[in-house]
Length: 605
Image (cartoon, rainbow, N blue to C red):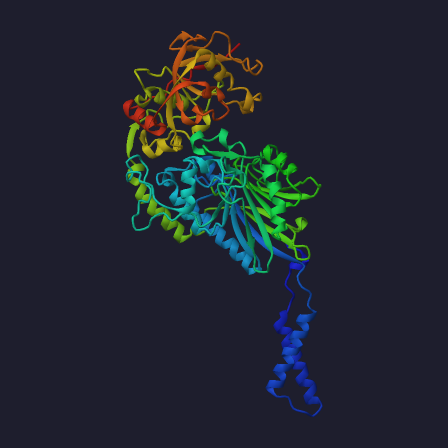
């Protein structure tokens, strides 16, 4: 981040000028035959220094450092695979991130700049077992230690429901049976969970009955020189469609642009002219490796930026797990900073917000940002490392429990041409076999699993599979739900894999992983007509429109999540156990497990 000429320190400084003035006065007095006392010299120095200070112009700008992260997802330890690097450079890990944040703040302080650390959502949820086994309490504690001050809510903050999210803010312990269900709130009795020290913000999340926001819509930070910066925090309006319905029951999610624009005059009345939006919604640059630019960026962030009030000076975004950093034109045609710091703590965005002291507003031309890779070649922050070590010890009995074996090194989620995967088949089979969803003697005959809920390949230790490895695959703790659907409803469901929110472009297709059902779809057919007539079979028999079939899925899909509203038309729903338990139990019951052929879904015409 290059500094302008006005930011450079003047050589010599005030102290040198004052000493020079005092010395000159002494020489002149002695030359006139007089004498100079120490007191007189000191007084002369003070008067000269005061005169110099009076003539020195005040700084035209104030430089404030904003440090931002997003989509941390409880990754206290560095993620593995592609999620653990930036362009091949190993990156991430809470102990390294904490070090980077401290060092960046120290660098700003050395330049006389104030600093604030913020985040753009999904700090928790869909987390590795190290955090999830303790309801993400370790992640909140780690972020507290990193000096986070404000964060927008993201969709994954609602994974365990808004009541649980309130506990994340205020603290307290859950009576969860001391790890009986592979989770354990407040495992250290000497140190109960006290909640987040940072402020969650939810400007566009309202209680439906009162129209009050779940958390404060904004926060204002007043810096040492009196400058104010307002932070508006929001999640994506589409959150109810991608989280479990029960988790957001009683809440209303409103349009991001309308929400932020309505808050601009509110902040201005409070004397705030510098406004930053922390937005859990993002975009997709054409080159995912260009983490300090936005080549060909597309996605919701583009339209949101175009609609936001020009009084909003910067957008720190997230959700898409992409890395970008550039200025996009606002409605007035002026450049506005738009950034995102990838995910899992692999990047931190370092913004130098330049505020014009004459106007109190952001000077966008002199506002710069840099996406800094959180490399793993620095010393780990000791307190964060100690926190991680503590929870690693506590999670060990849960994580290392062997639940079965596989006959291949791993079971992969990589799909074939029909978009069916070996791991998808395993999970669907596990759901179909789970006894917890059998009710009144009615056993499901088909199962459906959303591919986005399969978060990693199923790994093994020389064929040995632990609960921790299974949890990495399915970290959401969704419940299984059995229900009745007619053949016609199932046809509608299958077409929704390629239409509505999931189409018509192939890049949006969401082909459900299935068990008990087979069919063929035609990639060349129009959206809404991709199923090949007569190809759908359940239990080897042709699907009949008017026949009722008992099926099973997770509660996320049951509520119409991922763009599958057909599930909401099902009847006689019965909730069973957790999906991770069904998965683990199936591996135990089929020990050792051999991946089956991907022959349930085919493409043709």
